[in-house]
Image (tube, rainbow, N blue to C red; front, side):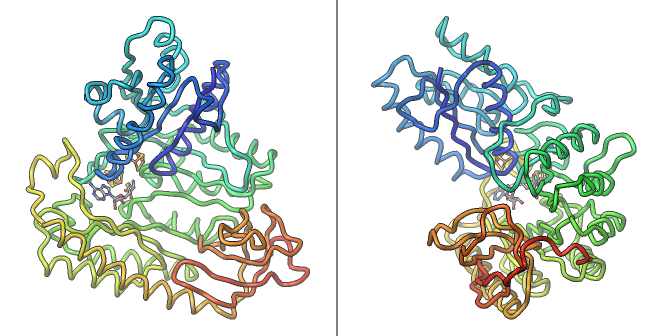
Length: 444
Ligand code: SAH
Ligand code: SF4
Ligand code: F3S
């Protein structure tokens, strides 16, 4: 049978789709990139905001038309929306045959066969305290970067967030299996590994904490860069900052989700830090890792957020001067603590106005920070052709900034030393220096 798999949501979902591909291939299914050739359509879904759900409801409308033409088609919903809505999806979308949550992918081959053979519906939504899929080697697309999930789940229960309900309890993978996977990836030619977790820096397995894991992966020969996402500001002990600072292969980029600047809102969000503590952490990070690139996530219009409290968010954005930020409108999620305790009382137009304001301020800061890089020489790992021109390649610098260079003799997977010549808020443009191919090892 041919399976078509479409992925929505975060990097963890991308990684899970690689796990699903591996499980299905071992179960003698074939993957197809062509929707009309599919016998099975799987959507790996996200639930983080209502807009993520809306996209899937829309997509299922289209899938419904395909099923009318081919009634034998099997349609499955995987991932966080499947886990969150469960039976409700089967009721609302009769086109769906299978609903499978993030800890049940090993059962997929059996479930698909059961639906094909006996008809009916399949629902597997048990969350596990142990499943880490460490025994499944993901079926990755060839490229420069490989994800490795080193922990799954989240126990933080930030009040706005659906993830603890869709992904279950926090659990970490044996470091030996993570390092073995990194070695195999290096042998296959991957240059960069990104360690993934919903709450990646709370990783712990026996005596191995996240700093120790990061250094072990960075020591794997052939892996030239190690990144990680997403960390929580509560788990940045000094040894972790020193680990990042000390190892040339650990990228100097930290995603540090702020969410809000007001102490009262942070408490209502249950983020466990205050504005001052967040600012102090940023200072400590910048002292320890002077060249660090900082990005963040921000939510506007959390229940009860007043104009003055929103100004606290603006204040942190202006003081920290992040390199980039993802800014979201608060979206009420079912069963979360915020949904149960608070009224979603900030009008939609006001949420939008706040998002627009933060984005405008951040864009000016990103532009100024990127312009500061003009004239500098940076090391770029080239990833793929640029979308705008086949004559250009896109890569990333150590801080994860996008850099576009003329292709010349370069190819994806090369490291190039690039002189930055121009900058927008999102992208740096430059030229590779002649004879500069390869890593500059004595960088740190
Ligand atoms: N585990 C990660 C990220 C989780 S989701 C972390 O803790 O940082 C990514 C981002 O989506 C969050 O950082 C938050 O800014 C945003 N988000 C999560 N729930 C949301 C909601 N209900 N409404 C709007 N944005 C939300
Ligand atoms: Fe959600 Fe908070 Fe967990 Fe991140 S740390 S996944 S925002 S509950
Ligand atoms: Fe979405 Fe689930 Fe990731 S809700 S952001 S796919 S963890």
